[in-house]
Length: 221
Ligand code: DX5
Ligand code: ZN
Image 1 (cartoon, rainbow, N blue to C red):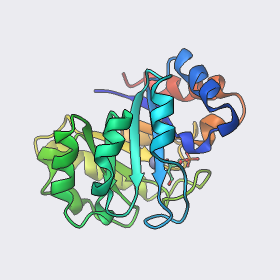
Image 2: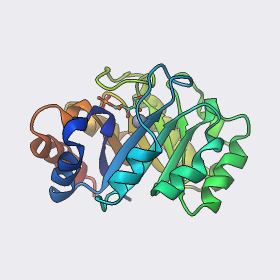
Image 3: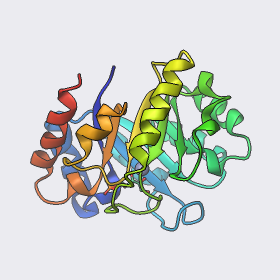
């Protein structure tokens, strides 16, 4: 199974974004978590297509685009064209979730299905055949620097059991929000594969912060 640390660009210093992404990639980072927030689905506004397009030219990392966007089907084609490798949409933001996941697949991108903390796991039941990754929000969406919701560990464990029982052990679980070196091992032990980390990576020494998280993930590889 794959175990990766995906730094969340939302916590980057945008005056030196290219430099910071280069430091991460040069220190072995393979995934970049790109939080697109529309101010409607989630209470903040981050960045969009122009930023993704410009960093695509410079970065070889896997672009994991997390769309906290109402009715995201309107924009998946543009984000695929900007260079997204995986596009995650929120079950809560899609009127026709099955169709949006099909749309993303047809564009040649991997599909992600995100669930907010209060959203039951049953939301994934009828679209597992179209889902490459389930994103468990371990904070309420919109901001970096929040605290991990401890109840999500059991939700991750239950999801891993559900995916295995449904014959989909290949579906990745990504956990997003409040991940630190102090809880990373617990979250991976519960069955997560991809850990998103914003403030834990971008605050202070970028390379050292990434490496300390990646060393924990490496124990599971
Ligand atoms: C929140 C975003 C997260 C966030 C993670 O809405 O989806 O990716 O940036 O930041 P930290 O790791 O600081 O909680
Ligand atoms: Zn995110």
